[in-house]
Amino acid sequence: MTGIVRVAALLTVLALSLLITRLATVALTHTGMSTQAARFQARSAFTGTGLTTSEAEQVVRHPVRRRIVMTLMVLRSAALAELDQRHADVGGEEAHHRAVQEQRHEISEERRRDRERRGPDEE
Image 1: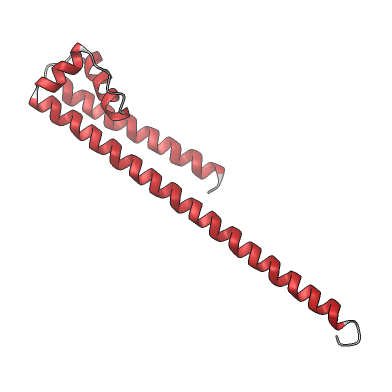
Image 2 (image 1 turned 90 degrees about the vertical axis):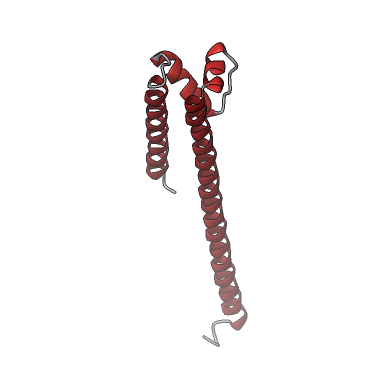
């Protein structure tokens, strides 16, 4: 992947992460949490930080908040799995490209040796 594509992919992931946590913040505030606490809990759940605070206790004890936070955890896991798969795919493509390049080099070297063995009379 080129550098520009990687930067664009990173910015897209960051934008989606911020969007998801912002939506979760709004959802948590609708359950009665303060905006500041909701934002912190949403980011904590999405990043997998899992800080233990009295605010976290408020999330665990409330069924709707707990569902929101569990959804964030699942989304994070799915996103990490997808990114890991994409990274593996890119690594596989790069390894394949290197193998093809090596084969081409070996073939050209073999042709060169054949020409040297034949000499100028046989060409």
